[in-house]
Image 1 (cartoon, helix red, strand yellow):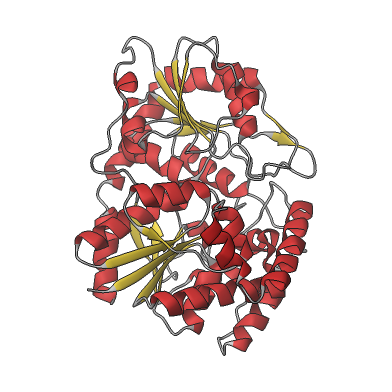
Image 2 (cartoon, rainbow, N blue to C red; image 1 turned 90 degrees about the horizontal axis):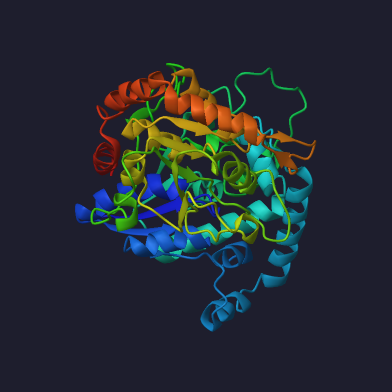
Length: 441
């Protein structure tokens, strides 16, 4: 038996969990011990429902993201000897994130800069927290899904590191905005990161994406949907998607009429920060879809991934049904059309089940995903318009209505999605990934 620590970017999304939980379940079923580190509210619920432990590093960011205000949690936070310093670092980083946020994020370098890795002290504190967690849990291997601090912490702790990434994150990829020529003055956190790497005698990097190249690197998807040059030393593992083995659709979904199309609307997290807006927010999708779909002869199942439904969306139209969470694979298979925010997991779900989509991507990584599945004829997409900050976004309901109508009526979208589904299923997915990991250790 081996001990594995599964780490993810500490964001309040389900996308990274839906690709890490299936691999963790495979390894657990083979007798290994698994723990997660993914502290935000929605991931925490999904991890608990799957029966895994979720560890919390002692750093203020993780406590704030967890939303755990219980007395034991607050006591653990207050016992931190670096509390005051780390809180100052956190406030500074969050302020800068708000100022530098934009929907146009060119590559993983730019993304990590926006998330605060320009701040040498923030990187140092987050890496230290991850190293303390690794020291406490003592895993044999760290399996990472897009957490740069965990990647540095694993190397500094001399632990084997296996990474599972999207192709756009690889340092040899063309980045998130591969259809444009990049500007010469893109901000980068590399200088700050290299200072931390030097403190642990780790080789410097020239691109942030190099952090996500592990002792073994697995890439989700396949070359047709997630291209990389032949020189990239990676293994494609196909789609990895989560659904509990005993999970079923609610009876009211099963009972929906077969006479009218079923549309599954998954906007993602409506608001990442409750006190302000950000380019990543999906509330604009929710409002536009309500307007576009309310008078269409369709049945709309709206789920929000355990995120609360904003009051501004209420009351919902009579052809809408809302659930905080529905099992994704089962729901996509039952649906005639998916409408979502362009998250990688949402795109993969539709391709796996052969269900066409209309995608409304809210920032560049999601736009990259949308463009790739549109290029193979399995989806159409509509870009929100935004001001210079990327926060004040708009989606034209009439244009969205027309795209939805077109995808529902043009059978080529479904045919193309089903062709890709057949190719996807030829890959091993979570079972193949687990075998590769076992062979590695």
